[in-house]
Picture 1: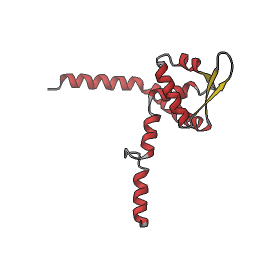
Picture 2: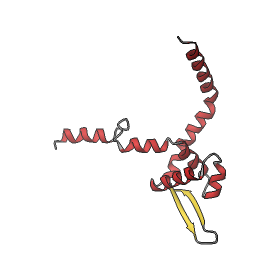
Picture 3: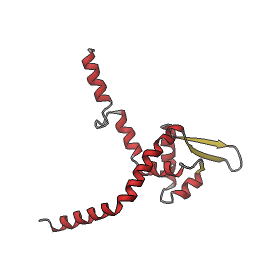
Length: 133
C-alpha cells in the first residue's frame, strides 16, 4: 500500500462521521442519556448499586445494569465486589471516566442555562408546523 493510500485509509478510519469509524461507536455510547446520568451519579465518588439506582430513579434495573456493564467494558467505571452477606458491589469512575466529567458538566450547564430558549424554539416550531399547509 502506498503512503497516500495509507493516509486516506487512516483518514476514513478515524472520521466519526462515518459509521464504521471506531470514534462513531464511542460517540454513540457517550451520548446515551443513561451513560450521562450514571457518570454524573458517580462523579462524587464510589456508590453501591442501590445508591446509583436511587440517584437515577427513572432507570430500570435492566437498563442500569446494562449501562454499568457498558461503562465497565469501556474502561470508564470499575466494579468492586466485596465478599460479605449480602455481597457488596461498588462502582467508581476510573481516571478515564473522571476525564469525561469536565465535558459532561459543561454540557449539563449549557442545557440548564438554555432550556427555556429550547422550549420556546420548540413551541414556535410546533406552532408554525400546525399552521403550515
